[in-house]
Picture 1 (cartoon, rainbow, N blue to C red):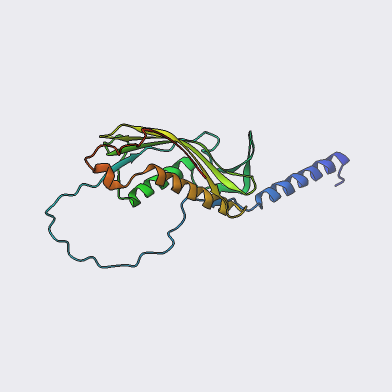
Picture 2: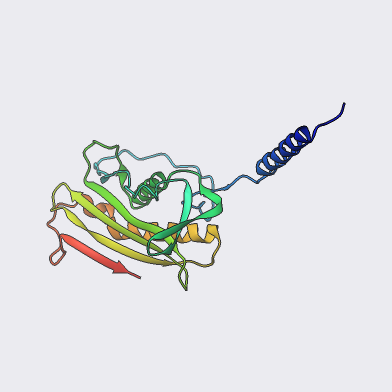
Length: 222
């Protein structure tokens, strides 16, 4: 059967389309990133001794860490870098395994637990109530490279005046790879938690706020 020029052109176009689709489907999947790294070492299995009867009740300090708020452009699955005053760029071939607000909230709660707090659910009473609003949190294409974290926060205490303020952190990045950028972001978030969370024992101590401690606090940390 003889093929007309029109049929030949359509066949060539279809073949080109199939090649393009095949090329797109052969692209490797994006590599998934998480904000929290694995512990440096695993804990050995131990046998716990029998517990002695408890004669004195020691109450564990409680904290309610609300879900961290982020600008909509940051709270996505794309890993963004700041490339200009009004421009961000998505890092190719990488994306977050979860939304950044979820990862940051969990990291703050983990750091609170490490300090001795018992995390409670939203709506429950707690000794401390932490609210964090992130304004900037992205790697910067500066020399040297760094992560900029800017946050507004409020720390409410049952027995003391509310504290609030702004914190600006600069965290150096060890290199220019996506994983190195994320590692610096984790370090910056950990530093923010350390700055905001007092020791758990202080949260349940029956005492006045230390003299000279400002209720409104602003910090700029390099």
